Each structure stands twice: as structure tokens, then as C-alpha cells.
Image: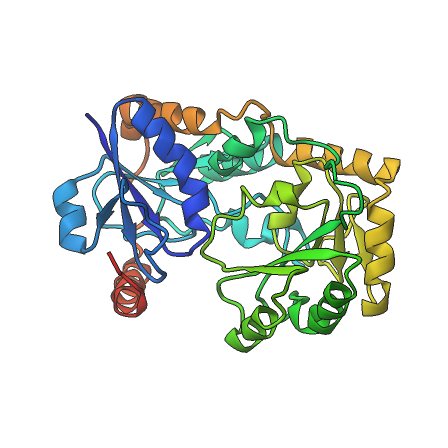
Length: 357
């Protein structure tokens, strides 16, 4: 029986890694979770929780999976990057290639990519650095979504108002949350729309509390540590800014409205004025042909697979890497300064994170 480890540093990691867990269990193998820097409360009774570094070292996993940009380099086994989102330029860099998605920090042995474009880019980087490999696998998080026939316009009961899923990222330069809180509250009170609202785990706590206080019969507030993927199909349209969750929603074949996004395109209805939000939502509910065609085209660009088997491809890639590729790579860079910072960050995260189990 092979042992694997999941390294969790943000609440959104749980929904990314659980499809992988199902695949590991299906193969008769074992996996454990190590959480640092965020709450371990979402862990279920049937999920193995390692609470200390000593337990991780004793567990001795052959691979650690990471949906983030860092990992304790001294953990046993190879380090596998599965990413926390799909490859898009969220922060307005001069080009997508300059975004953090493609930054090589020297932690990972294997990058599991989602589409043709990011795979080609990472393979170019692998050829340059020669200390990691790349496998075109798809994103495990989408497996539950792509395994079910949920795509297309939602059937609503007679008189049922449309449901808007509002999600916002946290960075001050791109978040819409402060600007839209009053408008969302107003629309919910009027009753023509119902809202599901969630905010990034790093969002300003004062803003989070403002949205929590809007909760009512027409507005459901979802905490950031909840699994959002099963909730997405409940919505008819998404309202967003530059959060990568809007791309996940697009795989339902449903429209997205944004407020001052940093990633404009024909696949979005983007508005610059708060007063235009409701009009844009109404337009989106008409499912404009050009908008939906552009949405489908973008989904094809972002993710190559529609079979819900990305987790299986990731595990196959890990097996192949360990058996064939591992010995052909150069040693990873020494990175003494970064290694010191990782140890310091891990100590800090273990002190500040919640470990209730």
C-alpha cells in the first residue's frame, strides 16, 4: 500500500484534493492530511489527520500534493503541484506569462497542468530548468463537476427568482466586495434576486462581517472553508470580479457578470458602475448566444478534458514520474534563503492555524 500526503495551507485546498483522495482510495492506497495556516475543521472523521511535522516524517509518504505555491521542502517523497486555480492573469500583469502561475520557486518535482497552453509553457520552463517534469492531466477539482450532467440553464420553479452566486477575491486592487455590498444588500431585500455569497479566506474581516450581516431569506452567506463546488449548480448566474472561481462556474455552461474585472473578454458581461449590475444580471439571464459561445470557447482553452478523470491522470503521472522520470532530472536548486523562509513560515502557520482535531 502506497502512502500519500496532502499539504493544506488555505481552506480552498479541501475541494481540490478530495477527488484525488477518492482516486487514491479506489486504488487501495492511503492518504493523510497535514494542515498549516488554516483551519482543519473541514476534515471528516474518515480522513487521516497528521498534526505534527514529526508525524509527517514518520508517515513517510512517497508524494505530497500541493494546491499552492509552497511546501515544506524537507517532507518525504516527491512534491506535486496541482494548483489552486486555472491559468489566467488575475493581477493585470503585462502578459499572462508573467503571472505568478508560472513562477518556478524550486519546490516541486512534478507540475500537473490543465490545458494545452499552460502545459506548453511549463514544458518550456522544464526544458530550461531541468529539475522538474510536467504532466498534462487536468484539474482534479473539476472531476465532480464534469462527471455529472449539470451543464446548461437551471430549471426554476414557477415564480422562483433567479439565484446569483457572488464571489470576490481579496486583493485590494481587484476585489469588488467593498463596492458591491450595499447593492447586493439592496437587490436581496427587494426579492427579485436571491444570492449565495462567499468571500476569499484572506478577505478583510470587517468586509466579511458586513456580508454576514446581510444574511436573510434571500441571501445565504457561505463561509470560506465550505466546499463551494456542490453549491455552484444552485445558481443561475455568477457575479464576480477577478476570482478564479468564475471559470469553474463557466463549466456549468452558465453566464458570468463581473464588476471591473482585470480579465475582460467576450466570455463576460463586465460593468464599471455599480448601478449597471442589475441590468447586466438581467441580460445574462437571457443567455446571449455570443456570450455563451465565448464562454464555451474559453472553457476549452482552460481545461482540455471533460471526462471527470483528471485525478486518475494525476495519479498515473505520479506513478510514471517515480518509476521512470525521477532519476533523469537535475537536483533542485539549493535555495538556502527560501528554505529558511519556508521553515519560518511553517512555524508561524502551525502557531496561528487552528487544529481542532
